[in-house]
Structure formats: structure tokens, C-alpha cells
Length: 75
Image 1 (tube, rainbow, N blue to C red):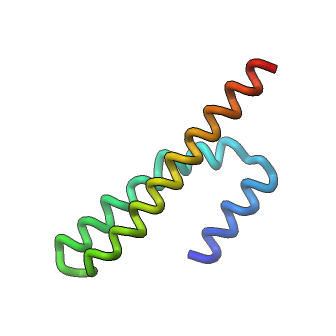
Image 2: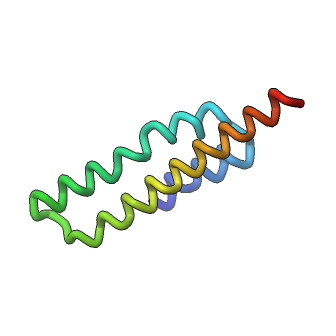
């Protein structure tokens, strides 16, 4: 996970908006995957908290990208 996190840091520092936008479509799927693991008894229910945090982050970034797009369009 650390190394995947580095991709996000590099993408943000270099303003790789297409990559960042693409992650907002895929990151919410983590909560579904974790819920399935819990339902199958392969993980404790607390693990879903990580999915909730990831979902919140994806929503936050999606909103920030929309705000940035609106700002750049207005300028």
C-alpha cells in the first residue's frame, strides 16, 4: 500500500489530473471488496472502516476536481 500511495503523491505533485480523476472511479470499489471479505468471514467488520475512509477520500477528490475545473473555466 505504501508504494501505491507513492503513485498518488507523484501524480498530485505533477498535477496528473487524468490519473487522479481515474482513481475516483475505482477507489470506491474497495468498500465493496472489503464488505465481501467480511461477509465471507475472511476479515473482521472493522476493516470496512478503511473502505469508508477511502470512499470519503474519493468523494473529496472528485469534488475538488470539479471545483478546480469550474475555477479554471471561469478564469
